[in-house]
Image 1: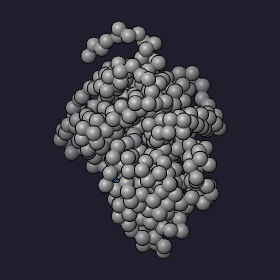
Image 2 (image 1 turned 180 degrees about the horizontal axis):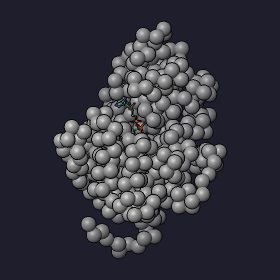
Image 3 (image 1 turned 90 degrees about the vertical axis):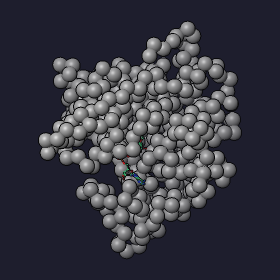
Image 4 (image 1 turned 120 degrees about the vertical axis):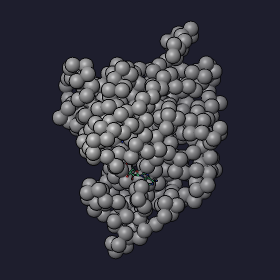
Length: 421
Ligand code: NAD
């Protein structure tokens, strides 16, 4: 990355996009810094009676286009810089999709697998206690991210309701249906990427019977594997944090899902006929048409991008390809459908959930799917058109698209605005 940091690499995409359009430098300057990042130490009671504390953050990166929106990650490697980078990406993503939001993000530096369910609930409630003044349905609206889920969102919504003295379902999205969650939120990230690939398949040279490799078999990875397999495509390689496996004939995706549902790794398939264990590097280099990174940041870089054989990379994860990785893939002619577009189905259905909570009127699954499909196709086609017209990568095109919307909103706010921080 340009200045060697995750955020520096992310911001370099902004500079690259700005080279292709006439844009006020003030706009770029404003988007280079998070508006507000709050740090807290969450102290919780463990089941054995001891107390432990964990670092936590909430970042509101930019709220020019509306309240900030973004998930909460529970991960041992979480840092303030990662949170700010993810919040920056959310800012760009909401602008690409024309959602009335700015970008936010949160995290707790913890391995949630090491906690009991009761400890996890106490941690989730402690997060909301620490950040109740920062979040709010018109200010900053969290959602799930890596190693957080609807159950955790339910506890958080409940804690916020206790603090406010009334239910405020629109404060958080990705909630259980019983607490005002939306139909269709579970598979929204994957489904958005799936609609995008289907819509652009002709231009991307993809067709029936694609071979697909999925890195990271969690929420996003599992659902995309299922949607693609249901259409007759072959999922030939998958991985999770415990390893990777390949099956040239195509996995029985239902079996993989069943393994994950009982807490096992995809590597439990390794002894099945036709399945072999592979390395993470072999998964990246799998002989496939579509590679779907759906795990974490920086998985594809200048060192391993050259090994990629896929025609198209669908970034369901945030930031899986580094700027150096991008340059290698561009030179090879591999199309990267960028995170700020490809995985935006999740925040789009989160937006639908927020709208439904505020209306108090709930939509059918068909409504959700058709509205999501329409937005993915509309913005996907616009990004693709910019990429053709300006002869730039789909990533640069998505940043151009987002920047124009952000610039219009920054200008509309007035030019004498300043931050009090
Ligand atoms: P998740 O926790 O459900 O799944 C993450 C998966 O990645 C797990 O299966 C884990 O085992 C695997 N993993 C971790 N480290 C790995 C490694 N080194 N190699 C291979 N696999 C590894 O998380 P998720 O919600 O599916 O999120 C995955 C990515 O998608 C993240 O980058 C997240 O920010 C992004 N994303 C998620 C959503 C959403 O709605 N869930 C929306 C937009 C973007």
